[in-house]
Length: 172
Image (cartoon, rainbow, N blue to C red; front, side):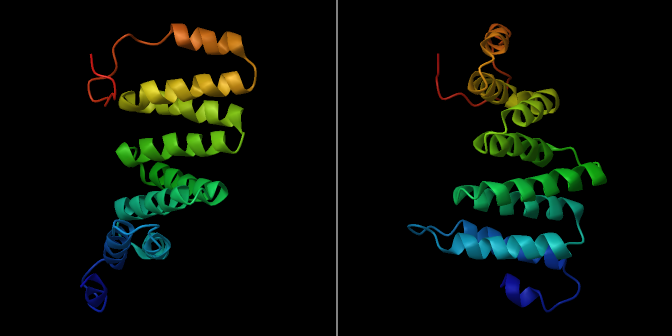
């Protein structure tokens, strides 16, 4: 249905393409081969969208799809584009915060620990709900480069209570 709507010029083609990608990405199949098809829709949506939020979301979702494939260099490119788009449009919202966090994770997986630490710190500054996880991952980066004093210092700075919106797997 979304593809049929593309023929009408009144609709934002980026929004329709994003929705096509979303449907394919969330189709439930073993080893979902449609995920890569979703990537093509997200990429195209980011290029043609008339809405900055759709562009940002499309870039983020493209990175997310590639993350499932562990294609870290490409993930980093899409997330960096999403961050740049958000900054350009001054859309520093939840998508922006998550793009910053996952970009840091991407850098960490590539062994770029110092850069990852900088991005984890930015995450902590802009998104209190992501603070515990980004702080934990920062500690892991300090350990990876052998800076145990920094890791210990950060451990001792942990706040005893997580932010109100933080979803914790351990319940008390």
